[in-house]
Image 1 (cartoon, one colour):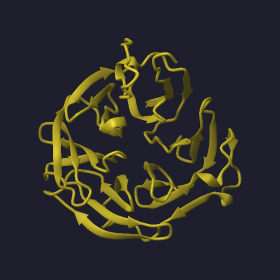
Image 2: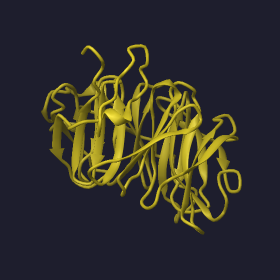
Image 3: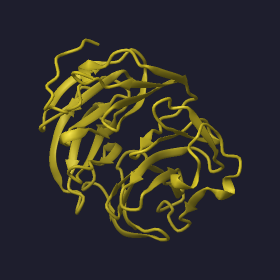
Image 4: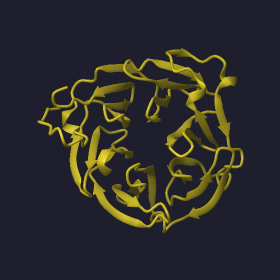
Length: 292
């Protein structure tokens, strides 16, 4: 990827400036990847959570006994990570573990809370993705004709307050792949796939009622579409199981760039580190600024 000149006053994410990652580690298969202001968290294998902190991003392993995690998001309201599996919801307070590299053997000291009342609406339904907006928690289900449940999430309770179904969520022949909240606008971004023609689009929704705000077709030839927010209200679409990044800026597709390896997910951490999860690796790029 080529480098371009950067304006000191423009802190927008510069997708074309990605060079060689300065940190690469092998990963087991998976797609989870999330951060707050201090650390990065992901699942690496069915029985391990990993916490990584800059600048070396060495892995601290935390035992996990509740199966495949479908999604991890940060709740800025509760200051905890929200962990979603196929059938269950958890929160994790990262302040309860030492973030030095190594393994946390005594997981009884870790503050992982299960919300036992939060379950799919029937035995066949499976949780898929989630997003937090203040005290609201949205949980989407896998498959086409996607259903989205809205909860009020508290430190000790999680109460359902609404259920959105097609055609309000999407058409009956469509499925919502990923939902994310933008911290700047508090709006929800989502990727939607039409199963009749295998076309994708990105939508922005109002979190008060999931009303449509804006949408655009996405150039995704194959694979899926993860979503990650960027500074200044921008969005990044990560073509998981493909190799394409699509940057959306000012309600328009700004750029599409091919990566060298098969993608799974990506996040921008502290506006300084661009962290990419590929099929087999975790790759960390240092986003360079002029006069650094």
